Image: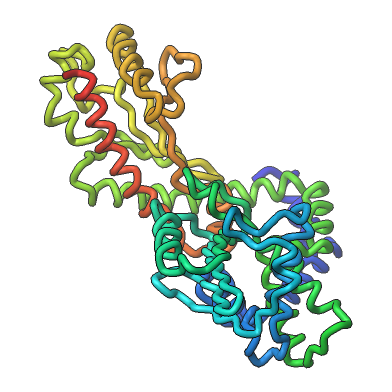
Length: 411
């Protein structure tokens, strides 16, 4: 550590704004944090079910649920909630939802809102830090379309902490909203003069509002102070971030190595702390065929070959899997490029300008930036391992598809 950075760290520790920032963050403790449930989807779904139900102890009736829908209308130019089977403003104004029933984890669906008299069904898939699983949203929609086909209004919502990209047809059927929508709902309920809210209910709503604002970094005073301190002590903060992220990255690097060693369809290759590599086992098993077809160096040992490069790129803020055409014989590299370009539906990066040494051809996110930041903030290694393991297994399926593409092209 240089004398300049050491001096900055000391000044930071003794800065009055830094002391004030510490006091503000200490005040942010709320019931959900104390109970260790602020990052668990189930508890958020339970709270939303309690809040939206017309017959719960909050005594709000259907006010919260109707306000939830009303906010959507006002923020989306009064367009219907949902597509052809959605709810219009004119439907909404004539409905009350005093018979609303909210089912939790029914057929594995997070929340289903049912009003028999209004022939109304609304599915809510709730995601805090995770993302959709393959085929999950379609399965839920298929079930509802069959089970509640006699309901006029069938609506599908995808609720997430932050904006996510839905895949395929899911984006055509599911309306995406974030927890900012819930924050607006809570602010509206707490500010309204038209309903009477008991002190107990008000306390619960305020605690949940504080939880969401904390999770979404919406404490304006903390944000302002943090930015000012970072400007004053940038070198000191950068040093802290560097060493903190490095130790976390090394832990994730070791975990990826464990996953590789436990998977029989791949073989560990020459790795570093920042690049964890492997080769598919089929390359070892069928290297003779690959050499015969001219897409593998004839006089080179597999363990010394870099043309087929499969690696996890572990940065200080995310992890990606990269499939590259590596360094090697130019004719072989060109033949591999032809195969990849013939299958550009799979090789999502291949059509960029061809690199003379390392050409990225396929990439998959293993740990997104927001997920990595959450790991740094919370230290929740188990949750992070679950995310990485799921995407690792998805990648293994992609490797199987990759093998089929190679040998279909060679046949």
